[in-house]
Image 1: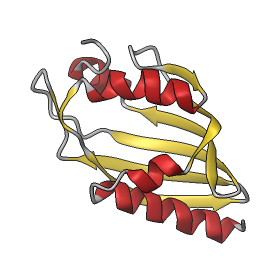
Image 2: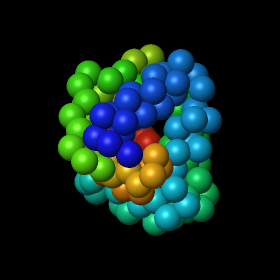
Image 3: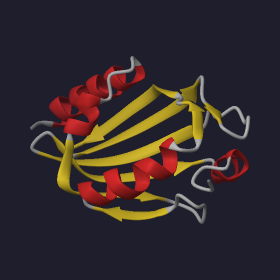
Length: 135
């Protein structure tokens, strides 16, 4: 895929997820994808493979939310097989009552239309205050 193809695909997947349709995004995760969340929070770390992402990371995150935030793209930057997504959340609330509208920088690497690396930077202080992964 070309740089422009990768950029268009990522824009489409994030748009679908923001509209409540997470299936296209989840379908774009390669079986060998590695997702790393920077920091030292309860959800920070490297999750190796789709099985670990679905079986460990997703439950840690989902059990913390009362309302899942919608991710809104602010900017896309692409070069080759890498796409950088600058985004923010809207409408998120955790079970401890914290509004959760984080800001994100996702550094993605794609292979044949699938995510193989997902590197996430966000406000880790908000992650801790919101109690993500603590319950």
